[in-house]
Image (tube, rainbow, N blue to C red):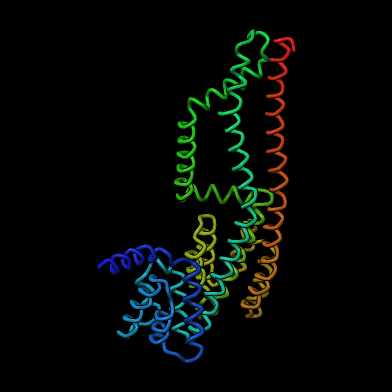
Length: 363
């Protein structure tokens, strides 16, 4: 009975552990097994037997039941919206229609692996500045709450006319932190929460991404990121056998941010009128640079959009890596200068208070 309780507890905890890493593993193993002519049901069975992740075990067992009922892979995946999004399901479905599920699985796991590597690079670039900012802010707060009050207590015993005005302001700020520190902390957390809630709305996302796109360096990095996603998913969806119209309908779900949605709707409308992709994007230079539009125009005329998207991926992947590296190199010295300046300024203020005390007592 205890063993079953422990097993159920582990199972309930492990069901939350199906994330991008597990999805990559599942798609990659399925691709390898199907490539060697192993059936889908048998492949799922093999994956379930060779994994220690209970979420994957449950998932592949349920999917195998669907396959045994003569359902296809995309139908089995559609029963798990928590694990697979619309783009995953539609892409696999198109691969099933065109008979190239193996290549689609290969492209999908490569795409998710690329996004995970990119995410880790970005997190790595911001980790050191974030730690530096957090530690410095904590040190400054500790200084005002625990160190400066003792010095200010000595200063207030002197003639108030001899205490510099700046010192009195620092003391007032220190007293405010001591008395209202917890309320201020809760207010900051509430502000962050409210900001996240607003950013999750359509209008909030539109303002957020419009602001990001207009920032000097971050804007270029965000543009490169979404261009790479646009090109990589376009290549995958075209490779799955979709026509242009369905590709851009699916892209509106994959790149589901408000500033891109009108662009994809425009492209779909223009395609339905018999016009080209280039005609609909040539003036959308904030999202699609002129060089990319020109490459797509050539790809359409030569019926080689796959090769065109490969070129776009190659160009902007390099740019994105460069922007991420430069961002890290720029943030670190800026943070050091800002934090160092604040600490030096506070140290000078403290020294000023001590010198005022020494002058008052005639030392």
